[in-house]
Length: 149
Image (cartoon, rainbow, N blue to C red):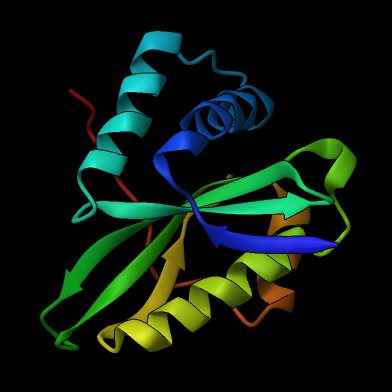
């Protein structure tokens, strides 16, 4: 049975572990333990930056995602960015992402100022793209550019 809830600080170790696994799986990137733990802890201390959602299956933490905020002056509302999506391989295809997305939509409706959802996905991640499209999301007409410092 799936249970979806907002994460609490005691979930930080699970979230950090999931983020490390997701980065390795999707980008072949190793995240430094101290940095990811500090980053997760910092988000719990700064709810103005966002929040995590945890998926449990049979009482076991099986996945998570992160919501961060983007103000849209064009819409006078907030886009919720879905980031750091991860479900442990042994719990995939059990509806956990669908359940997390459903909970995110419920929380957005409750918040009252959310004008939409956005996410980015690796171009080669066809499985994730199929899931997102199946749940009603579509490719936006934007490219994402970045400069890291």
